[in-house]
Length: 364
Image 1: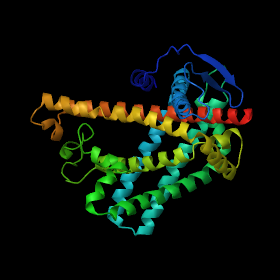
Image 2: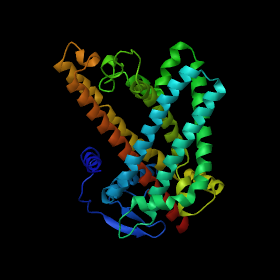
Image 3: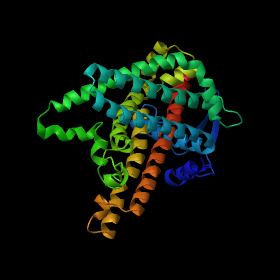
Image 4: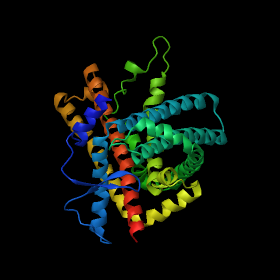
């Protein structure tokens, strides 16, 4: 975990010494509240709402900096999605051999999405429990994860609903844009297929020289590595885009289940009710964190420029040496680390927004 913590410090700007800000304790969910100096309360004003959304993201960064154990949430989330990529690659190979019908493909997609979402929701519930039961200002993630088992039933049902909704949204997206004239097909790049075009470029295409890593000597076939990367990886990215969209649409379901002990129906209705009041904060926070991740991923353009200067004949792009492949792997791992640490910040930030919304309701 020291490696993950160190990368988070350097690339997300987290420092061990917290900034000198005034703190106040909110008994509602026992999360440390931050009073942001110089940020207007905003009332119903748009700028104040946007500031509160971005302020929640910064509060999430400070909370994570004070509670390094929460980085386990980042690591375990990454492992769950890595397992999803492996399963996607294995299913792609099985389906190519068995040629199941459309119903069989939908069933596979549902169960894999359901299993992945359930694991992610359990981890999120553990994050909520650990933050809402801090001891001496410290959140113990594994204690929170152990406490999350009390909410297995509503999380199972919520996972099923999200899996069905995710499959439906993806099919609607594909059906909508594949039926368009060819001149509008470029719009696919702004949806779940965004990563499909990016994965073919260096440094993301470090397996482009297939013979180096994917040919089985004496057999001539492809190994599972090719099925996982890029095929399984791309399907996982598509799944993740849809999942993030659904999370932004229903951000308070898990906190309402865990903190207020609501039923699933009550939590969903309560999340929509709170969403009406805090949608601007949620969107501004999500956009701010998305800009951070997107900005870091766009550094691949700088890597491409450097590789072009070092090797103007573009052999790096199509036949990278071991040194360039090693660099690409480290670069990709750093980007993935930033993405999952930012996801952790987003989960904490959603709790700050939830707490602030509950405080405002209580003061009315």
